[in-house]
Image (cartoon, rainbow, N blue to C red):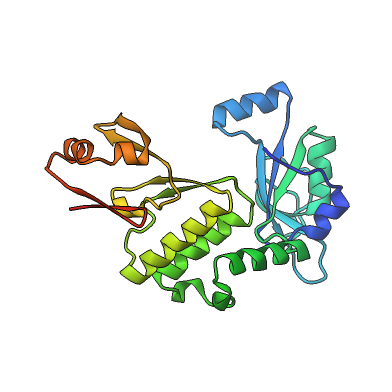
Length: 247
């Protein structure tokens, strides 16, 4: 579980309604629960933050360690607890560490800057503010690529990237991938459509019946004999402008 240590005060200040809090212990009893339930954690709760009330945690508890904020009584089952008190009880009484996952993390100026840079690179700044449900398939495809690029990946893995796109959107997608390749990002692609293989790609692997059939330089692999054997029909191969086409 990847995490960045912060104080309880900081966590309570950051948490918002819907954030998930998980607790994990290392005692024998904790390990037994993890094995029995096939879960890496021992307890899960959700934060509830309402106006000027202290942060609360909604969860189900077998014990009666804290008063339920909703009813004012101590009971088993689903209840609301003061979040600070709950974390301290789980830490001090049960020896369990707490993590929380933000439903909506705070957007920092650095994140906004990186987003603008990626949108400018992909030439999609005109889509800023648009509802993603209103985008065309081609626009949505480039937005998905942008979401990956904000994390500065060294490689992108794409599965049938031009599927369902019209001719114009397909052309724009390929030009986007060419730009990324020229910027040093490795493109690993699975496709049945030869023109998806952009000129910047140098290595091609042909898979036949679940096994590697050919692997090597593009011009040595994408030959009529190899592709005819791969697809089980006689084909001709045309190369134009760095793109390969089957006739």
